[in-house]
Amino acid sequence: MTAPAIPTPAVLAHRAPAPLRPAAPAARTAPVPQDRPRPAKRPRHSAPGNLRQREIFRQVFLQAVRISGMNPETRLVALTLLGYANFRTGLVNKHENGPAGLAAATGLTEGQVRVQLTILTQRGWLTERALTTGPREGQRVHQLLIPDAVLAQVRDRHAAETA
Image (cartoon, rainbow, N blue to C red):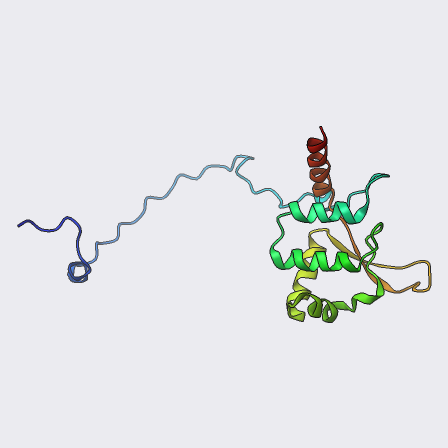
């Protein structure tokens, strides 16, 4: 009989390790502009988009979240906030109760909710602003936003479906 073509673990354990060979230094070249890393997002992509006259915030936000590629926890918090938000403006109402209320509504922990709120804020989906009119004047509230780049994708998809 001949030796097996593939060594067994028992045979490999008795072999001496192969000596290391020093790697040849690579020639240094100047980076080409295409090789340089690009910023993750340009300001225009994370800037809030402006809705047109006939667009309703709630419908467009829902479509935007669906195509955004958010992770499930972030999407859950965004859609839960949408349930508390005004359907035309995206202003979150007083019944939201902060991270504790969102944690109770979503089943996540308060820490997880805070992380997801930070992600939504950094990516341009959520902002905090002070109200200037009404009985809650001066209070700081969350407002849902749709980033301009995602809003353009929603409009393109809608145009393709209706054409």
